[in-house]
Amino acid sequence: MKRRLLVAVVAVVAAIAVILSMLITRGEQQPNIASHEATFDGIAADIRTDSITEILVEFGDVSYSTIAAKRIRLRNTSDLPLTLVDYKATCRCTWIDLPHGAIAPNEWAEAELIFDSRGEYGTVGNYIEVITSDDRCRIGIWMSADII
Image (cartoon, rainbow, N blue to C red; front, top):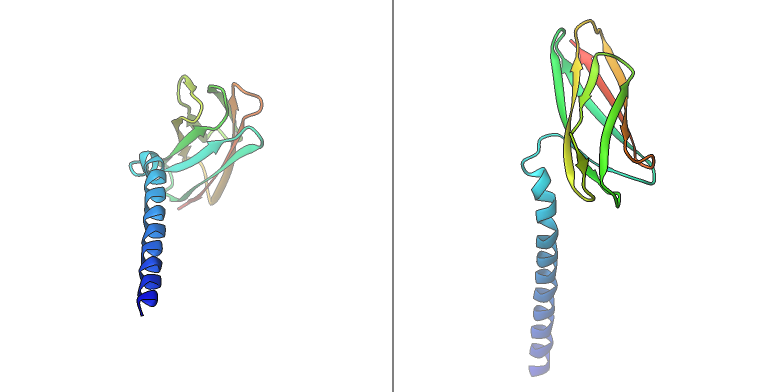
């Protein structure tokens, strides 16, 4: 009887240790996520050096003759400071306000994608290529909107 009780106590203590370990690990990871997402209402993406960073921005229904905007938060995952230098868009109805200055490694910066629906009809899709200070870091932004 004592042996069974001892095994049960050890099992309960082990289970509590596992649960506490999971909670502590979860707590360590949570602040990083919360620090940029809890107060951010937009799209977040990592700027990569090994492939093109592709971002899809869906504006959904946009009333004719209005200007819509979406915020994009970008994190520099490269090992060097990175500047978003310029952009090329497939339509003059879509542009992006880029952050000024360099983004330090592992830091976040915000941009704003803007779409002007004046003169547009139906479903609209455009592409923006963001040019960076590092040729390894390429950013492509696909946007879509339904003009109503």
